[in-house]
Length: 543
Image 1: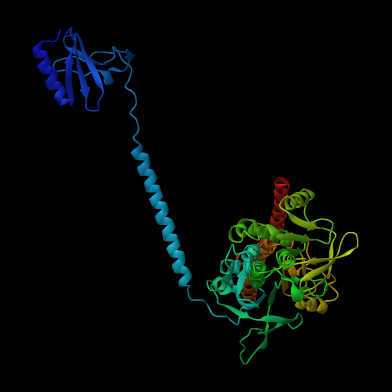
Image 2 (image 1 turned 60 degrees about the vertical axis):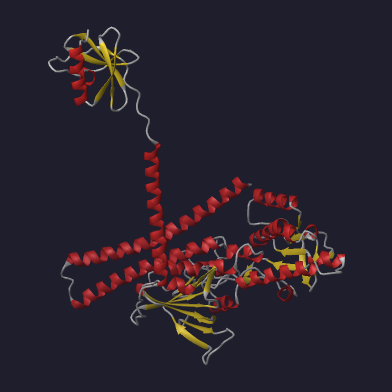
């Protein structure tokens, strides 16, 4: 039984422990208290000088006396007594997680903002570049397509004098050209200025907007001409090279069919995409002209794509999406009259790909009302129609409003001249024959990559880009090896070869650079093989 004096002692004791007395049991043998954390417990007095804690629901549990007993003045610590189950764990406040999440987001946003600001500042404030050094070897790069631009991005210009010669002063992202033709992407979004690539190099890179007209592999010179509309006093000159990166690409193959260049549109350069875009809209607007005859409307709205390769198939699909999605909203009166025809001379479209992909493409085009004419050869192109030979060897006239010619590539005139200068080694009409390290057969110091070569690799942008990366790494190792060899020659001239260790170190490092050079060659070929296999697998899974 708890006496009045005992209650006063309990209250004093609880005040020191930051506890509060709530109630006394009817039997007077225990009191109910509450802690500042909010858990109420019972203090039982089974013995006069001992008080132990228990839960209000009187559920029993074995908890250690150090956690459960609270001594009063003059009392003894009770050993272990049965007590209730421990209090339920506190609910974690969601504010802690929200606070941590907010801090993380803030850090990420600040980091991203700082990076963007730094990149913008770095792009607008490029560092000072080293001038050309007469003692360094000169690399002349012809072209600025996928292969050449990839080479320029990866090359360390500290070891070379680099000169770029190209008819255009920008790199064009060619896979997006079909989107430019229908207005999905603006032309400026698919180009990158060449000087933007070269301006951030350690040594200055000279860029000339000109067309190479002659390459002399014996004299190691390149002659080029300014073919722009605005010309100066000098319009033609030549430059010597130690190494020539030949990446001029290829041109559209017309197979000598009359009227193609006069009336057809190609899809290889940015100017071609802009021309197609303008002509496409002209056909649509002319078809809506007042009092236009139905036959003329059908002709104007008939879009013909010649060539069932990747370019032709991709453009036909892009044109269909534009006509279905956009034309039906802005020109509903003529949307149902538009017709698309794809012409291919071979038995199937995409002949270089798997049968699964061929069947899938054909079925998809048929379900989307794209007319596919296989085994059909174009014989002549007129201003408003095409003369073609069908699979039954019968001539037919196909009227059109827009004609896009995408029948593949052929070698440029400059490439044919270079092949004629090396008749013993260049026997392939399709392009330049190169060794495994991309060096042109029969020529010293000339490396070719991209569509101008005749290799087993696919003529795609991905392959040309990887070839450029490989050459950049190779030239870096060549510069390192040449530097070590020069150190060895200088050591021989100075008579400093008594230190056998120093000589061995130079020889070992030189040999290592040579091995690294061959290893890079193997790695790049292996990576191209893996890329090709991955693409084939994706095609099979996609089909």
